[in-house]
Amino acid sequence: MSELRWEPPSSGDSDQRAFVPEPGGAGGGPSRWSILLLVFVMIGAAFALGVGAMRVINAEDDYGRLLRSSRDGSSPGAIPAVVQPSDDGDEDDDAVAVPDGRLSRFALLDEIVEVLDKDFVEPARFEALDARQAAIDGILTALDDPHTVFIDAERYRLASEDIGGSFEGIGATVNSVDGAIVIVRPFRNSPAQQAGIRPGDIILEVDGESTEGWSLEQAVAVIRGPKGTDVELLVRHSDGEEELIVVTRDRIVVPSVESLPISDRSGNPVADIGYILIAQFTEETRGELLELLDAARNAGLEKLIVDVRGNPGGLLRATVETTGEFMDEGVVLRQINRDGEEEVFNDRAGGAGLDLELVILINEHSASGAEVMAAALRDHGRAVLIGVTTTGKGTVNVPRRLSDGSVLYVSIARYLTPNNAQVEGVGIAPDIEIAIPDTGFEAGQDIQLYVAIEYLRGEYNPSGSSGTSESEPQEVTSDDQGSQPQADSEE
Image (cartoon, rainbow, N blue to C red; front, side, top):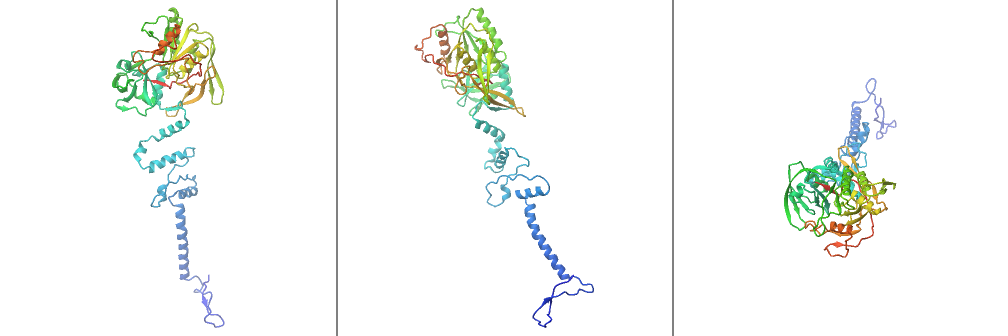
């Protein structure tokens, strides 16, 4: 090895120098100064390279993590969204860590939750928020379909009890009207009726808690409870008076069909016309109806009023079978699925009520299966509809059980009437429109029932003065059908 150094040139010009090898002892070799210089150069280069490598590979920012994951053989971590940088310029504090492998289309939603959890100015508000439920609600709200709903396992159990025909509660049918929880009707001899609950009552508070913003399912879940326990209801009656009513819950057995005594406008008992109330369509409805039709036939009755006011619907098969007892074959309803394919539900020949002249009473709380029956019997010329336009639920819903026991009721099809009229959002218009004043039921004045009696007796005078909205029979503009009971609920 040689070292370069200056050496005078051969011309003797001492001002000119050149590097020449300098012997190093006997065998020659590097001087200690040259070795020391080389060491310093290598250390400097290593230090410079090391700083850069540490900045890239060992940094705690997203790009450092990305390179480290590539270096050690693992899959690169996702680079989260960048938020507004902080004033101190620390970029690491602004990055949102999202777990690796979150490749679903909802990864952005996870990032949003992480950002809110980390940065939202009012952390208590975010902590109190059920982010999962809020996301579910947002998706379903965006669908703009009131019949596709998510309910937890407990609320689904309560809904299933309705169809079973018995439950523990106060014994009343309720509905949500313009955001308010309203009593449609208390059951006869129920705890609700005995405590003074009336049709049309608005429930303002339950056990001191305001019902503002409550869903119908939430109201039912809270008002129901074990037999023998009390619930305090602050209600506003139709006359505007507010009253705190304590109701003791009991086991409520709901017969889906009842035959009740009725009186005419003058208060005289009616013996020549039968009256049947169908509260909802369950597995027992057809059997209960057949017993009452046998009794009517044995009593020599030829005319019948079927009341489906406040009926929220029920089981589709029960609806078709019950309706079929009043018509001799024919289409009961049409169902159109998401692909536009039609399924027709037909009635079989024969029926226990074919020889009866019928009036069907309907109102704004008649929904789903009640609309199916009213539309089918009217379309086939078997009944006249009296009352007001129905709810307009012409959607088929099925419950899809989810992994945690909760259920998504999803709309899978639309109903059409036998005459192909739309039901959803339209409802079934009556042939004779009769509106009951707010105080009508409280005063014992069921004007719709009175008109039904007069119509079947041939005494109805559309121009008669009764203080109600009575109109000439009008052309049918819509029919319908229904499915799961979601218009009114029982508590």
